[in-house]
Image 1 (cartoon, rainbow over the protein chains, first blue to last red):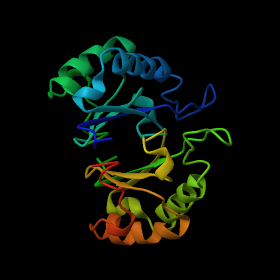
Image 2: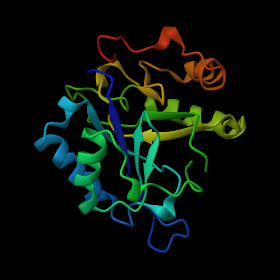
Image 3: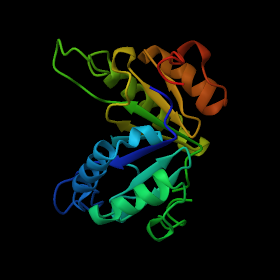
Length: 109
Length: 109
């Protein structure tokens, strides 16, 4: 496999209900990951050099679901299933990060 | 948290014994991850800008355990617990990838 042009990591961390750190799992990361994988397969994103991987905790738990794109190191926060198409079209294919979903630079920057 | 200078992803994928794709789990990724996390904590690698995250399948299953470092996109294969110090000292702190552990460029390159 070639080195990805865009390697997307989706936090899949879950914690028990009421845990003080919260978790991306509690905020709906599973359906974000599933939507991204669905688009990856159905739109053949591998031909655009896109790879998608589930990941453990990426850090800013209360601001999730978190989605991190390398090599740029662009972190998105509070991503919803409905945001996935915009990330795919705008960033993963189009090359321009989606400004409105960027993590607060005080948290990741 | 600041954006990591080196973000290390360790494949944590397991598959049942005898699965045709094999897995990093079957090849000992768990102890690689634990050693890396031990050194991360005990050597305070966060002060060097190092972050460590467990990950799902990174691709080249039969060549694992796989360890991937971004933003460079450097993939190591067949990593053993005993190799972790060399990766930490040489690459994560020293900035020079460990040549002898690099994934075959036919597989990742």
